[in-house]
Structure formats: C-alpha cells, structure tokens
View 1 (cartoon, rainbow, N blue to C red):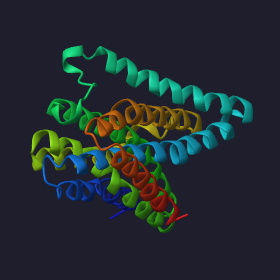
View 2: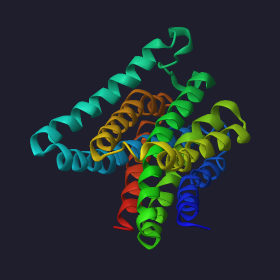
View 3: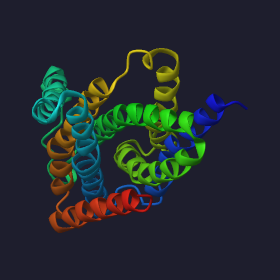
Length: 260
C-alpha cells in the first residue's frame, strides 16, 4: 500500500472512532431523563471546548501567519461570527412548527431531540472534514508523525460520537439510526482527506483553511448555546446539565493534552 493509501486508512480510523462514542451513548436506558440532561450538557461541553480551545486557536494561528498579525487577528473572529450567522440563517429557514426550540421538561417532543442530534452530526461532520484533510496532509509528509495525531483525534472523536448518537437514540429509540449518524459524522474525515487529495490541495492554503476552521468553531458554539444547553436544562436537571458540560470540557481537554 502506498503512502496515499496509508494516509487514507489512518484518517478513516480516526474519523470512525465516533462509532465508539455512539455505542457508549446506547448503554443508557431510553427515556432516562437524568442521563439525557447530563449527556446533552456533555455534548455542549465537548463542542464549546474543542471550538474555542482547539479550532479557533488553530484558525487564528493559520490566519495570522498567512495574512499578518493584524489582518489575521481580525479575520479569525469575523469568520467565527460568519459561521454563527450561517447556522442561524439555516435555523430561520426551518418553519416554526418544525423547529422545536422551546423544549419543556418531560413533555419535550422527540422531534426536538432528533433535530438536535442531526444538527450536531452536521456540525461535527463539517468540523471533521478539514480535520481529515489536516490528518491526511501530515501523514503524507511522514506517517510516523501522523500516528500520534491520529490517536489524539480518535480519542476526542469518541465524545463527539456521544454528542451525536445520544439525542438521536433518545428521540427515535433506534440504535441503528443513532449509530449510523455517529459513524456518518466521522466518515467526513476520510471523505475530506480524499477530496483534499483529488481536488483541494492545488488551491488550498492557510488562509482558506483558517477561515474554514474559524467558521466551523462559530457553528459549533451556536448549536451548543442555542440547542444543546437549553434542551439539557429543559429536562429539569439543571445541575446535571452543568456537570455534564464540565465533564465534556474535561474529556476534550484530556484528549487534546495526551499527545501534545
């Protein structure tokens, strides 16, 4: 197998580790309000921490290096808020009767949880797309350097799988759908690597890469604040949702520190 094949394999293994997180989320009994409140908070913690600590910082580093300190420092938050506006615009296009934002305790409609799970899968999938391209590029240069990067990405993809599959399983009761979407969000990594190899690499540069990363960070933070945390509190376990939030941040912090 050539270096391209090895790079794609490593990227696929890292991305599809979201399925491990999906399996973990299925261990909870369906309808368990305490688990649901904590897991939604956990999901928000995962997405907020990885967005602000990893993705935003990486985007700023790329943009300041390519555009200069001043222009790069302005471009990063501009792309970040552009990502928020993008996902907010998509949210506004959904008819009110199909947009169950206002969840009220145990009467919350399964459609609300399903929507949260699907939006989370979308955000993580978008995030995993450039992440897969970055993993592929590093593996192309030297596979030995890529291995610890792949392991670190695989570890922090596990809680991302929980973030996707938990709400979907609670909403539908379908393990197949929950696992399917968890794997699908992770599949964006090898797809991103493959497309990058075939199409994007000739035109990709640090500026485009940084803008994309910053926008993805904005999308993930918006979903966490607008969807995940309100839903977690709606189930009547405020403290559990906050504990879940902190636990999600702690798990992401550990996964990012293990292979510095």
